Picture 1: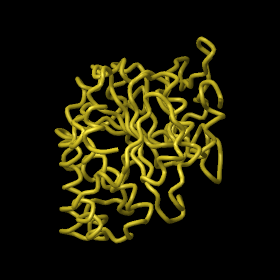
Picture 2: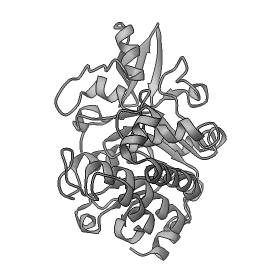
Picture 3: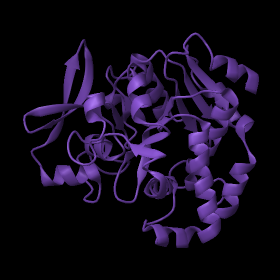
Picture 4: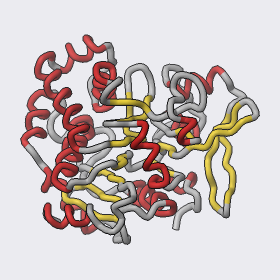
Length: 321
């Protein structure tokens, strides 16, 4: 699929809806080996289509495209068409190797940047391919645009912001952030950057937190992950919360443990440890299941769950097709 085709698709009769973008880049390492599209990404797309009619772009290795299930409104995009010198600049200052998990998880943001630049798409959402969404994103387009001028992400802990759910205004918003990554890594190196910014290591999540610490007031804000407290900004407008990691770890577990995991240092885990009476419950509405955070005789809807265990079928609103 070439540049012109994607540009035209981005200006379809769905121009008033908020598009979403997934990414799956083949790599080697402890988390992903090879390039074949994972089943959990297909489940992510299936759940998305249950509530959303806006186009979803899937940015992935060209070799993966024939293996993606064909669905109306799901548009595969060949990653190789959006390679840029910025990817090479980043790889030159990052220590993990070009096909390492941490490298591709960060360079996907550069590929996203270039895809948005070429296609002209604006006001989009990006989330990881093991995330389930439980709402129509386009219904909240005006909320996203009024609250966030550039980027918004989900905060996880004092070290990390995640793309459990992410709002992107345009390619320039991403470009400012990815240039910061390269500049600081070139200036400091991986180890010194971690020390200077006080994070445990350098990866995409800690790099976004470093960026937020420096530019957050003007360039990066956070989505609400709790219905109360300092991490609830935007809850009133959305009427719901988003998941960075902690809700998914508590509800679905990880690849090796859980459910019921609550990490002490995480925003969500800390609250759940302090209040063991709080829980996540499932309500059925029009035959579909939705997760809610139940606390103090109140309930807050979860707009998304980051399913670390990859057991997507157990937590989808209709189960698996």
